[in-house]
Image (tube, rainbow, N blue to C red; front, side, top):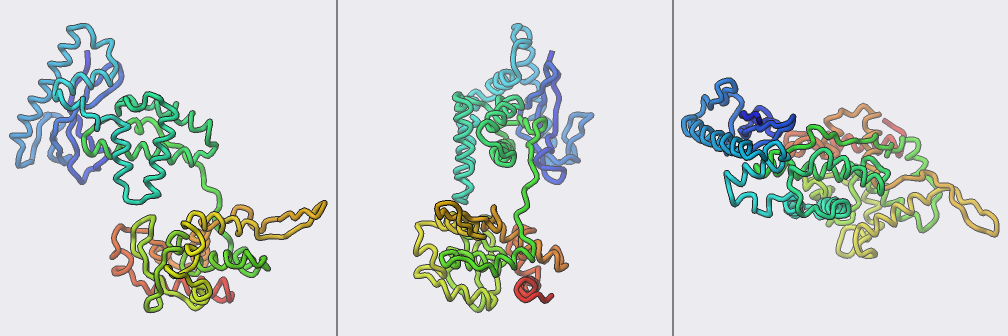
Length: 404
């Protein structure tokens, strides 16, 4: 016979916010959960007495949960008397109980995993983020041809293990696979918040991660790159790498879409985080800006390329081709790269690494990179922006003029 009890689910909300009170059903060493429609703080639930306490609506809530658990117990008893309970999977048991409690709910297509995934992905403001979720969706379709019928309960630990094995057959990168699995986890968390499901396989299934390869240059390596005798076509790409560094590691998408220098500063909303940045334009940066002025934008890359991605690929290719040129047999030119895997992603890491080597405080580095809180005031009002300006000047002086 199944064991039925109440469970205050603080896994997502923590102990400082109201958490959903659920009915837990344990059967054959497995569990499923049914919503009561009641949310409480931990101090408002007496687990031993199984009652709501210290809540202005405690009488009404206790009446609701008493009726709900009676309905669940009655349905479980009915299934047991019919002799089908012992043969049911937990997903089937929960579906039967939910059908009894709300006949319309289980027929709602928005409660299916894939439909919910699509809805969650479509709600992302950032186009690149939507693309990443769509990539995960395409991998799910490739893995499970019946995925459109999946319930959240069926996306369990065993399903995730099989999905990861499938991903490993096409992608050797542990971290690349982790992106898809984190996307699935985010959809689960969103569905739990809306009480669409109470299943959460990520309690048992842990997403693996591998240490990220170094993506920064030492100050000595950066000086070598900045002074390297590059070929003429590489000069403009190296200049843009320098400019990104001079502007505290600005991302290429944001660099390409800068509009103007205003009052000696550039201000922009970062595409990735939608946060406001304000960076002082030092003379070294202004010199490069003046050299590559654009028509519709501050700089000219988007005058020559359809989009920033095309330009970023060309820029990274040019950076990786900087190095010693060797002439082999039959006059074939071969390049020995200075830094084989360098890309524009290295700029922010390099700036932060060098700043830390100068003993610039961590909170200043975090503010410079836009880390920390979730509001503009966290950085640009509460934190003195002059500290960031001074930190950037110190970094540039050390790299370019070897003075701390």
